[in-house]
Image 1 (cartoon, rainbow, N blue to C red):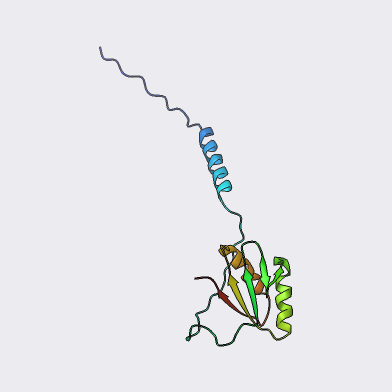
Image 2: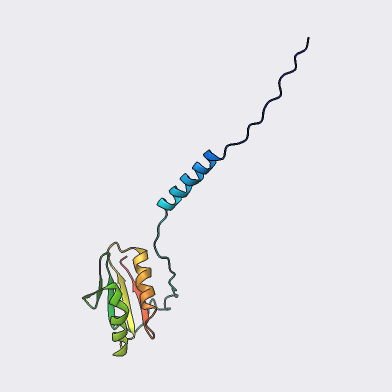
Length: 128
């Protein structure tokens, strides 16, 4: 006598574990991402002689915890106004010097603030 095997029942796939995994992935990516503001800075080629011949009229030092304009500490919010006041007196060139372990994001933020000042020539320098 030949016995036929019973047909296998196809169970419906439960979506509960899939939804759990999706929520865990969503939580992981939300917590591991950064929420910094991104920007771009236009960088031009240096002059043929290795730099311009004109000396900068003002120096902005970018440090990890503060900004100094000609040796005076300046708040990030007041930077554009202070530099704009310098350009009104004929100082149209500014040297931005990166000191210490300042982050690239800090430089991009400073450069975007300086972009709002019209008629300003900015040169960026840093330690070797």
